[in-house]
Image (cartoon, rainbow, N blue to C red; front, side, top):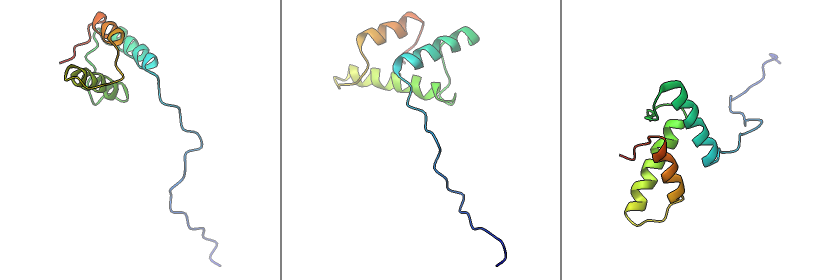
Length: 86
């Protein structure tokens, strides 16, 4: 025996964090606004950029009459903090 252990390097994460709720993402957006002075999060910004892009996509889909999990209350809250849906 050469004393070598084969390891392919693929390991399951010990604990996967639960997906954030809309409220948690919105809270993150408020922190971003406090730090940056605006809510125009770049899409490449980790996690929050993906979330803001998804909100815009859902808004557009709702305007086309598709059912999405973005309520008028959520839209109002985003608009109230200066979020642009374009």
